[in-house]
Figure 1 (cartoon, helix red, strand yellow):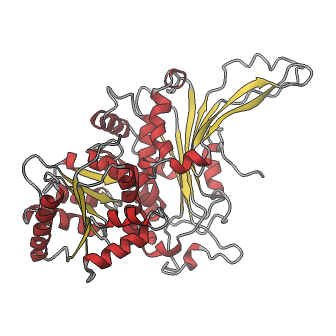
Figure 2: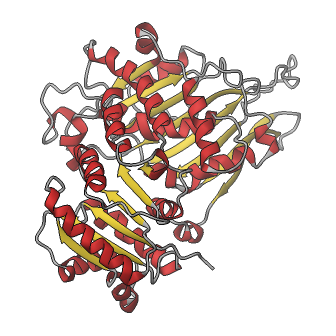
Figure 3: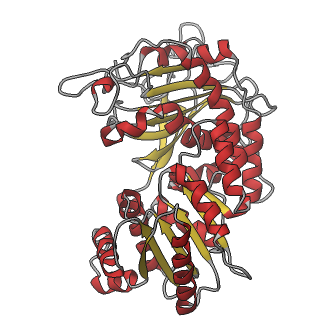
Amino acid sequence: MPTERRSLIMLFGATGDLATRKLYPAMLKLFEKGNIRDHFAVIGTSRYKFDDEKFREMVSKSVSKESTNKKQIADFVSHFYFVTHDVTDLEHYSVLKDKANELDKKYQLNGNRVFYISMAPNFFGTVAKNLKAQHLLSEGNGFNRLVIEKPFGRDFESAKQLNDDLSAAFEENQIFRIDHYLGKEMIQNIEAIRFGNTIFEALWNNRYIDNIQVTLAEKLGVEERAGYYDNSGALRDMVQNHIMQIVSLLAMEQPVAFKDTDIRAEKVKALRSLRVYNVAEASSNFVRGQYAAVGNDKEYREEDGVPKDSNTETFVAGKLMFDNYRWSGTPFYIRTGKKLADKFTRVDVVFKKPLVDIFAFPQSGSTPLNANVLTIFIEPNQGFSLMVNAKNSEQGFHTEPVQLQYLEDSKRTKETPQPYERLIHDVLKGDGTNFASWPEVANAWKFVDQIRRVWDIQQPMFPNYIPGSMGPVSADELLARDHREWVFKLNK
């Protein structure tokens, strides 16, 4: 039986797109499973002039695709309340405090409070400081937890200022920085594959692994996010958070125990050993791109809301090096971009070939052995495959690559909790395993900032890749210089 979690959830930005598309459906799933049931309440806030009834209608509509059980939805939304609120107006916090205390008694919440800020990042610090100054944090045995969405700053300095603002009101173990990629099933499976299988963990080092590749590909362009995206770009939007979190899970040492403090400590140690490039290294080890026009699709600079002379990158590929005993000399290649061949996320672990290919004897006609490759499919398919060499069935003795593969079927995929369902449940449990800690964020920014500084003084030749491709030619050349190639590549 699931454990019911008692808590008041105070949601700032309750009428926004994220809340209606992701948060309310995720909460309904938790309600259906009994993770939240009788002893929870949600206070939604925004500057809209809503009342409880109108707010509940909005929530009902947002979850209608998730369930046809009208009674269950009605029971669920009966726990939702609305307070019109300006986060900069101190008097408004008194109204919130009174409502929070009222609901705490009504639903017997034991003083447990989650403050979820689903707003623009410039309000994060304001809300956090006002919550403490206006005494909305509960006292006694109840918990207080703050949840914020990315971006966590736009460089190290702004991220540090944000963290200082949050730390003035909350302890680090009370702050949950959501990166929805860490809620994905196969991202969480990285630890199971690594540390639950001797055949992989024993080989998970520079003596047996040639390189590791991480690809986050998107098929669409910037769509309606052009205004935000042009001030961010692929480096800040994808590499600093999603990719660096995935890489840290792949690179970290085995934790002492499978708990959030130990896992976070190992991720931080891995990121601290990540080589921060100088100008020459950054120029040679990272490439950027911007998509061109094709057919009826506009090039990036022609998208609505994008300046005609924009140098914002829509593609990044790079080579990461860790200066530690486990990974010294083994590169991690990353790439991400918009308007690529398809939408998918995958990790390819390329093992070294045998030192001696005994099958390539003179006049054998045998093709060289292929590298063993472990692929972790993160989305849209969920599963993994292992490429091994085996004898083919033809006359003589010839080898061929054979794929051992496991993919979750549609039934299991449908039953798998969605990222926000997992992450909200983790917040209610107080489990910070799948959230970014400040030291992780800080080290990621220090690495990314150096790439950004180099790019800001260089003039790119944009646009430089065709939609439907896997990015600019320079991304392939990045690996070719090391006599390697991407595992996933389009057929020529």
